[in-house]
Length: 267
Image 1: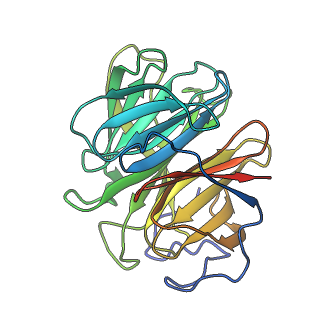
Image 2: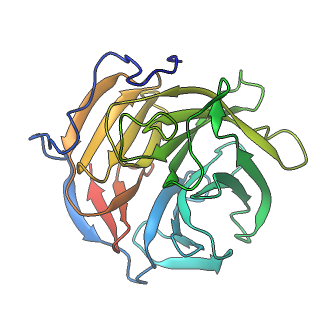
């Protein structure tokens, strides 16, 4: 994991903020599958055990969808700004990141009820990296790791629009949550890295490549990076207000747009 620095010196970088790559997203557009008009979808994950999608919204809603967009279940879990959702394939449990609170909620996919809450420590090695009162955590994904004491690591994106900020950085944090403990606890940051781009809004972990896919809403880009933060590829991302991304078992891509809609793309 890269050491903390203002620029982080992480090798390959993304384009400067505002520069859009010319390489178009290499998948076939299907369209908006969200017939329910789910309010402000901001996070999305494919659940491999159920073969369905889970989405969360800015107004505190969570829903389960078929891969064609049909609503299976929906619940309001409080007036909280839910910005990202992921799942642990071993247990099937969902994990939702809350912007502003910088908390990770553990959610039962059957009832959509909150089981536990984990507060994310805003500091890394005694240095503040996620300032309170700013935009906060905007995306989350889980990378299983049987050798890790917690069964894996979460990657959480802090939404910042200033690459030079000293205490509210545009970073992806590697976060350990004590999933094996029976009670709520604090989630600790084990590492951070920057990909030198602002407004990180969506994350997806791909187990086949062991890579992360990262959305930047402000630059309308999707980038593939290693788990050390090194750029592999980047594409111009169609759409608007892109805030969530996931891929199903058949290779179909889904992008949640905060302005409305879940856009599906074929391989």
